[in-house]
Amino acid sequence: MTPNRLHHVYGPVPSRRLGRSLGVDLVPFKTCTYDCVYCQLGRTTRLTLERQPYVPVDALLAEIKASLASGSAPDYIGLAGSGEPTLHSGIGELIQGIKAITSIPIAVLTNGSLLWMPEVRHALMQADLVLPSLDAGDPETFQKVNRPQDQLCFAQIAEGLAIFTRDFPGEVWLEVFLLAGINDNPASIANLADLARKIRPARVQLNTVTRPPVESLARALAPERLQELLSAFPGRVEIICDGAAEAIPTETLRIEDAQILALLGRRPCTPRDVACGLGLHELETLKHLDRLVAAGTVGIVETGGRSYYTLATPISGGQA
Image 1: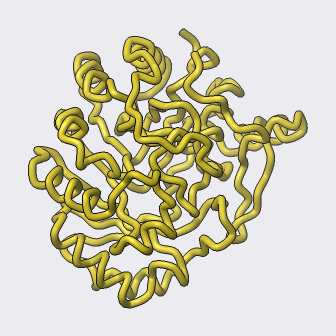
Image 2 (image 1 turned 90 degrees about the vertical axis):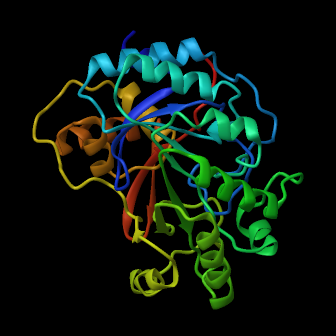
């Protein structure tokens, strides 16, 4: 299986949290439990709580094997992608299957909305690292920021996060996504910090808008404001925004356009992001991107003084 035959595996993606993470997309594009105002992938097109085997586990494992065989080993295999990965009813089976073929640690990047379900908590127990998010400390802010599926209960979600973190044998790193004028006021921060104390993650990771968000009201916090808020949260706290890896490859490798398009389909990227993730020289990356822009396949969005490359048409996602 060659890179241009991969439909659900992408990257590796450069990440400040995970180094080079090989992404695995478990659900069709924008199938999610939330419709977050800051999402870099646009509006959720399928807002649901229905867990299904959206992609056959065997197909996912075959793509992971092919990707691992074709390039250098990533630091993590990240179950994430263009929707909420715990909506895949076979995520536990997938984690077991990955463990059988590689010793590379598995990270699950989730919004945490389904951890109140015992079957979801059980499915994630063999992962090495789970990175849930918590963007609100009260139901009103939860509705404003995350725009959840209407059957979700904020208190139930918070309780699920605490139970999972207590029982999980690996580490939980809790991401708190902060938006200027929405959830960065003193009351919101106090509520979030109180919940973090109850959840007791190994790390609290503060984030804010860096890539183009779906809604213009989603505005970034200034770096100095993020620094001020570090002391408000308990335990180990760090700032994770602008997470592209710093090391730029100097070798020129053979990379197919399909690999770049798969990466851009899951997140807007700078040329540095693409170069770091795929192990490509930055000048060679720019050649690829310029050609894709000229063909109308890729577009450019300016955010925060940076140019981010995105797909001109969103990926279909989930279709083999």
